[in-house]
Image (cartoon, rainbow, N blue to C red; front, side):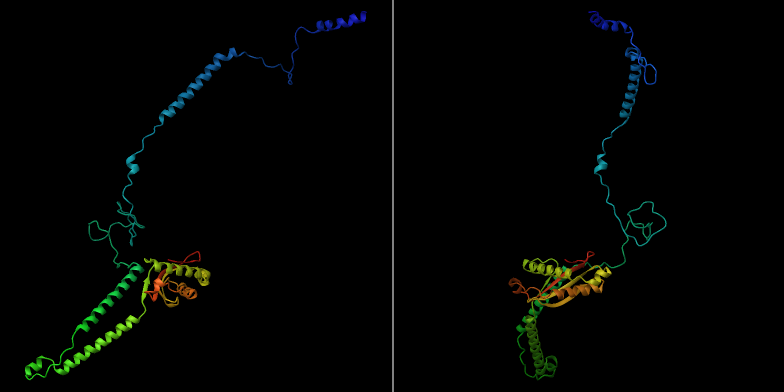
Length: 327
């Protein structure tokens, strides 16, 4: 029984053998850990410095914010656009720059002329005529109508003049010298009859001439506009399919005004270049394209009833994209 009693008393002996104070643990460097200072010892100094630093930063920030001012917008300058800017091209220049310029130009021009009045110099060249094919067509049509009206009035007056009677031979020598003789009266009558016959013949020939219509870039009547638009689309399609190779290789571009006269059956009567593009290659190509696109559609009944030949005037443009555009 003694061995059992020894075993039971072994834990108590081990407990009594443990040291009263724990051993200090060494760090890898072999030194003791730093002593811990309680937070209460640091509170007065650290917190005071932190508060002072935050207060200074706040004062600086508020000073910067208060120094910034936002002024309201000037409505007068916002909505006042000022006088318009005028730019002119001058054909002379001077070395001196004007102190107070009236207009803007590509070169300095200080003064000039023989007057102190505020006048604008004008070009000595005559004004250029505007390119208005529509007005030219309207004037030509009006001129033709005026000539027709005057011819009809003259023809009516000639028909209304009665034949001059043949008077007997005067017996007095004085009367014979003042009044025409019978031979002269006969000659005048024959001349009037000849002129009347000639005018009647000319009127018949004129009335047998085909009735022409001139259509510009803006056709007012729908019956002409539909036919002209179909014609334009066909010409553009044929022109783009057969674009001139010489113009593409030589990089030729330009616009020309061309008038195409079309008969009632769709055939071409005449092609005329009213304004050249400046390149013979483009002018010849435009006329060739018109021939290639022929024959065109026949006139519809509403156009055929008063038109035998339709003159279409358009502006053709050979663009940098190697395309043909008609306007």
